[in-house]
Image: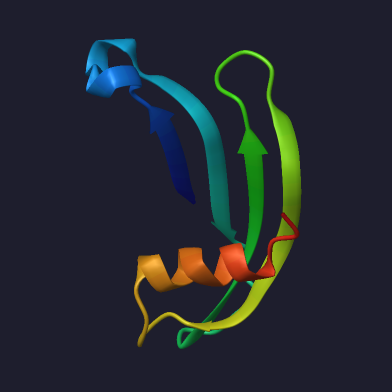
Length: 81
């Protein structure tokens, strides 16, 4: 599983940081060694109230040729935001 955390640091102050969004990308084990299939979930909010923005699936991602940033871009392109 890959977890993406987006934090806001008001005025650049790390001690005041707070999570404003999270994403999860999970290998659903339906792919092959060359092409992975992944489920995703994107949420707004931090440790308190959170709301799921969207869920979905990225199929046939060429995991041997591409990197994690390309996987994140593929998720964001498919997401209904």
